[in-house]
Image 1 (cartoon, rainbow, N blue to C red):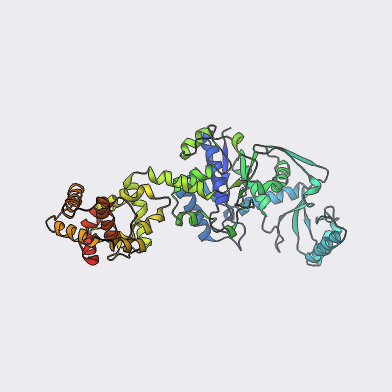
Image 2 (tube, rainbow, N blue to C red; image 1 turned 30 degrees about the vertical axis):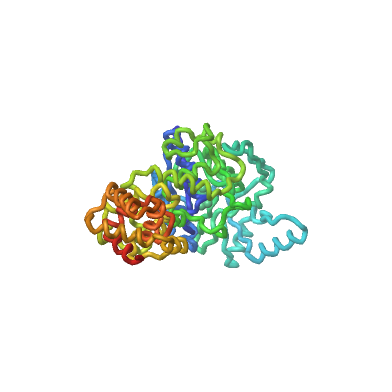
Length: 477
Ligand code: GLU
């Protein structure tokens, strides 16, 4: 049977980096084995699920290039399936109605706490007589549905990442609730149950998810057995950790894919970085690869058990590689919205051809797309702000005279070219008997306000094309 995997996010928040990384591993595994990658939206938690989170998840996965083959399937539209499956377990006697009230459960928990025992349901309603049931019903008690868990069972599976895993039935908290209470029959079915119904129905062969789901896996294996289905393979992927070695959380600042997008990471760079969060290629020196290239090499043998530390420097480096190697027109497409967002006006000569020249000028200096905002400010504003060094440069002996010399030559030069700009600089050096460095530094300070920046001649040409060079030279002389 061919491989079928799924990513099953809950739309209770934006697409989280941990979920996205799990999606990457699912995607790579499916593509490696020519299988199917399925998207299921687990929106059974009606209070916390929101359509805008679903949109964020779908957009985020799409943006990253994690294209799914089937779905999205919505659990909220599949309730009838879950209810039928609950009914079947009830009919088979593998599940039962439990009428224990919240107060009784609280008292049970308190008593266990007093005895220093772990909290668990004591299975008190597992074998109610018809008379007891009738009595509870006539009291008007509602019932949850519990699935029987055999305390003596040892649940064992061979995890594709973690090897042999075993769990004792007695450590699973007693018979588990699979559906909430409801006045009329079967209430809302719960996570561990619906996941299994869906994974069986969707013929999932490999469940690849974060290691925070390990305890759920033990319960779910019992449900597979009860429903007479073959258990899939499981692969529990390592958590993503912050610099302190704790699980990356909201407190670490950005955690959602849309945040990373806003911070100026490219989809290709971010997804490449995510493949390395817990996995390495057989040639571990290879760090730059597309999803297709990574898929060729991907296997769980090279997924680490240990948590994966999030490394901003590495993400930045990978991102810069993508930016530096991107064709100019593609990078321009990505930078236009960044400039627009910054409020820069892309008019008055700042049209596509000019923008592409600007992109060529700065591409090699960008790490994140948003770096283009401060880096190109002088190209989008009329005046320049002089930095301290810039202002000192303009006060150097001979600086003003040099700039006046440039202005004078510029008068006869309606259209500047790289050659004519170089010639002009040479001419001023010769006429005024000054060092070339003085001319270059003064020119840069006058044109950009600073003494550092991208290639001076190219910057000058760009400013010349939109008529800002003369204006700035006149301003400072
Ligand atoms: N909905 C679960 C989550 O967002 C995923 C469950 C699973 O992969 O089995 O964590």
